[in-house]
Image (cartoon, rainbow over all chains, first blue to last red):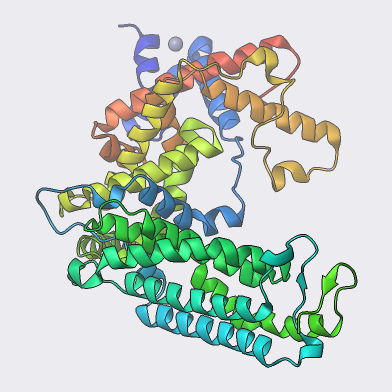
Length: 282
Length: 209
Ligand SMILES: [Zn+2]
């Protein structure tokens, strides 16, 4: 092995600072007298300097904020949380609902919703006839619901949906007995409510109750999920429903409703009744 | 130095405590673990695969694998090395799978927009000429990285873009420091040839020293 070969063998060590003193001395001595090795080494160092100029794209802060949500959605989608693990420690339970919100929060949320809807429906009921809720009759004709009927059926729908959802959301998959849930009965109720939701959505759309219409639709989506559960004993299916409630932000919507008080709009709206093709019902 | 070592030791202990809690079903502990490692994992993946969406995909796969295998994780092992090992292996797998797909070539590079246009400092330049030059430089660097094998690229990215010491890389890859150094050296020689090619083309001097 000649001097140049020996010198090139320590290039890597020289570049990454792991030459001991005596090797460094002989390395530098050779570079001092060999143009070829000196040039070769300088070229590698320059390349390293060039490559270090690389600038990496930083993701937006929103990327990091949403990171956990996206990871969780994927883990749910890919059913990672219920892979069987034959041995080892207990598999971590992936309960986004209870993790993100304690159980009392759901109960509080549901209470808020019931109160909100109650206030809203109460107002509908108590408003004087002259300020009554308008509904379109020109196209719907005889099928258009009266606001009285709409109000009572909406209230009924929301209350019954709540009962079903609360039972499932509060079901603790770790400790509760699945049979106490009586899922077949809840599924029957859900099917009935899904049918009812179709009628309500139309009525609420005509009455321009967009928020309430959306709430009915959101509840309907989760009820549909419950109605379509194929394996009622499967904890994952139940978890999916719990996630459905969460992913639709139902409890957040209730909270927002509490803050924004959409039912307050009703008073304003009834003071300026829509002009054309509307008939007062009261 | 001492305080940094102590900080590292504390973090390592935290990771173990978090792992233990995740195994006991504590989801917030898993979130803690993800929060602690998500940036390092994402950036390492990004530096190896060179694409934002794929990097996120890889980083998610990493955490999914971590979640699935925490139970079998050796208590005496170093959590961070284990997580980065999964990251590097996942990123390398992706690069190998991608090989069939056409990549950006030198010929068409100047005519396409960078998929992830760098924000901040890179685009802050007001002078359009110097900003075009900077973009060209960045493009050539990315292009040069394509000549490396997935393993060389991973090692190079760890050392030069993610502040891993050679001994840490050796831990992550479960090889000797000598192997790491020779991978780095081989990578550097390839990069040098590639950049020399650009320099030879005369349109752009990559080395301004
Ligand atoms: Zn020589």
